[in-house]
Amino acid sequence: MKAFLPLLLSFFFIISCQQHTEATISPIDEEDELQEEADSLPRATAIFWLDKYHMKELKKDDVLTFRTAKAKVIIRNDGTIELLSFVEQQSGNAQRYIRYRLKDFKVKKILMDNGYINPGEQYVQLRYIPALARRVK
Image (tube, rainbow, N blue to C red; front, side, top):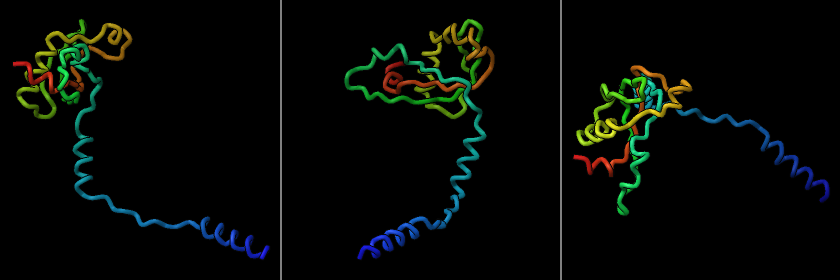
């Protein structure tokens, strides 16, 4: 009986150490197309939170979600941002709200001085809260 237990343990050890070949799953063509489309979009150099200082305007029953719009902008030396175009089509309300918030939005001076954000034409992500966007006419 004493010899049977080590024999049984060694048998389980040998079986568990064998390499099993798993069947590879071929990727779906649709996923490849989506990946190529995502790779063809220009990369954003920065993410700007347009509503960072406007959170107090949220009401108690508002849902706290955010949306991201990728846009082509010009960042000026003083930190102001001029919106040129959106990469993907945005709703009219979202476009109006983003333009409204960009009127008083400025890139922090320390980010410009340290070279994290450079002035000029570039693609950025603009994040906003849709609950606040519904209130702007």
